[in-house]
Image (cartoon, rainbow, N blue to C red; front, side):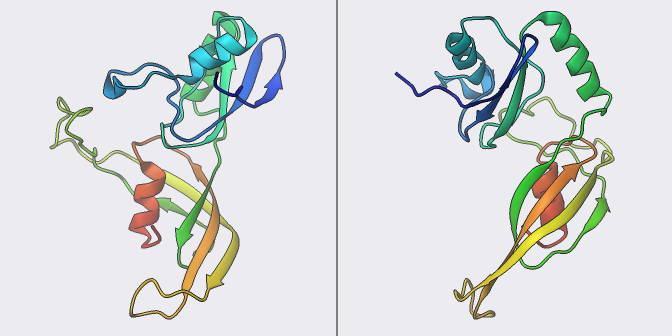
Length: 177
């Protein structure tokens, strides 16, 4: 039997869990081989139907919010859609990066499975990311012949738009993958 998912908040309308990396939120034709889903595990854990309010990518860990009824799900999904909810992520990037905001449109990123029908000629879409340095560290390990040490920054990142792989792509654009 799988260990229970950690419940961070639970009331009569909502349940928030700590989603581990590698767990899908719900079934997807993109990952037909998957047999475990956060939706199913939470439902089994509390013995009640739940409705996902938002998604986190499979490799992403973090707080995942479920509504316990369809009306609450509708209202919260609407708030996410209208960007009334602030989403913050933590990421470790290479190098020392300060605070800032990047407004850099992103082209649709195509992959062979999910985007077979996507238009490669589509104009770039607006993408804005706000970022703040939380902490920096320099380690005495060389990752290349150019530098004798390795520098990293722990960043708090707030995507103001929701593009595919926006955080990763924006940090790479800033030369801090």
